[in-house]
Structure formats: C-alpha cells, structure tokens
Image (cartoon, rainbow, N blue to C red; front, side, top):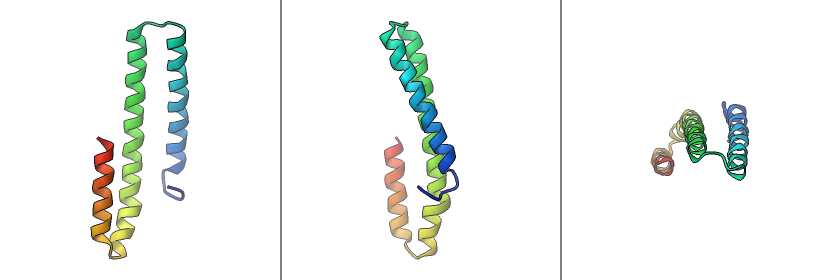
Length: 88
C-alpha cells in the first residue's frame, strides 16, 4: 500500500484501533461490566470497517485504475472481487 493516497491516514487509524483493543483487554482484566466491554468491541469493529473502506477506495483509485489502464481488466476485476469477498 506504500505510496497510496491514504497510507498515513490508515496507519494512524490502525494505531488508534490497536490502542483501543489494548484498552479493552485492560477492561477485561479489571473485571469491567460485560456491557461496557461489548460497547467498546462494537466501536473497534466499526473502526476496522471504516479502515477497510478507506483501503478499498485506495485500491479502486490506484490499483484497479492502473490495471485497467495497462489492459489487465480481467485480473483487476478478479482481484477486486476477492477483496470484496474478504471484507464480508
């Protein structure tokens, strides 16, 4: 992903997510209420989905467009399909 438009933004978000996960681990170790832990887990899931969307847009804006420009439409579409399946 190096050189893509959103690399720094994605890296920053992933660092925040990692910190959030560590906070959830600490909550569990401290015996915090399950409801509170579940709320935090839901927030992490949402953050991961948002990062996935950013990466997908980056993929479309760079990898797919470049592949089509180079005449590799079929390969580009197959890779896009694989990426979308993995996001589910």
